[in-house]
Length: 231
Image 1 (cartoon, rainbow, N blue to C red):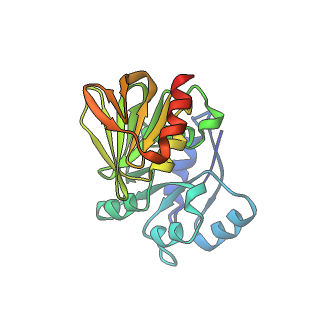
Image 2 (cartoon, helix red, strand yellow):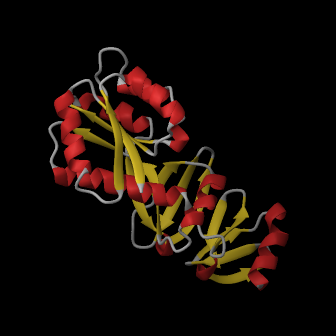
Image 3 (cartoon, rainbow, N blue to C red):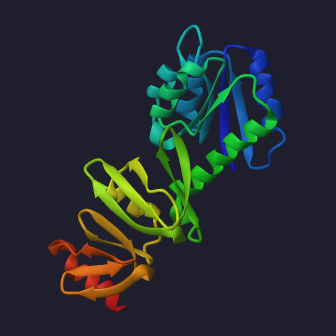
């Protein structure tokens, strides 16, 4: 169950969200607010998983509101009548951006993204997860874990190579993505490479061949890799 609140200075907009949430069994809209400061007070006592957050409000913008809270633990779906805020919204790692007026189908698409994203953030609670979500090109992209060929780290970015698909470039750390992958299936073999065990074709000296590509084994990862590989 995803617990949510909605914040919008226009009561009719909140009524739409209430109506749409009432049709879903995995989403609980706990409360609605027309004043952002009241929502902040509520969240200090009752943490929530998801915000439906209007951007243009007189006392405090939705962008300012979201910057003021603990973003790592609270997802946001921005709602606004102004499309020019979309880029800034996604830069704040928004799950989605609903442009008013929106249909129930579009709303459902957004909350399904939130549900999937929540699952990907808690792999320990979903050991059978078959996919993960990463943020790239101002959107959340769903990646089937079984299709990952290997992952390459480039400074603050990752390149995720995927079978029969375009390579995805995302701003993310190696440690962060490794935490989202099944520990029994993936291993870090170099400061710049994570690979899936099942795609290893050959191990020779300090290199691994998979899918026709040679991946180096870093000195600090060599011992741990060989222990896991022998198992």
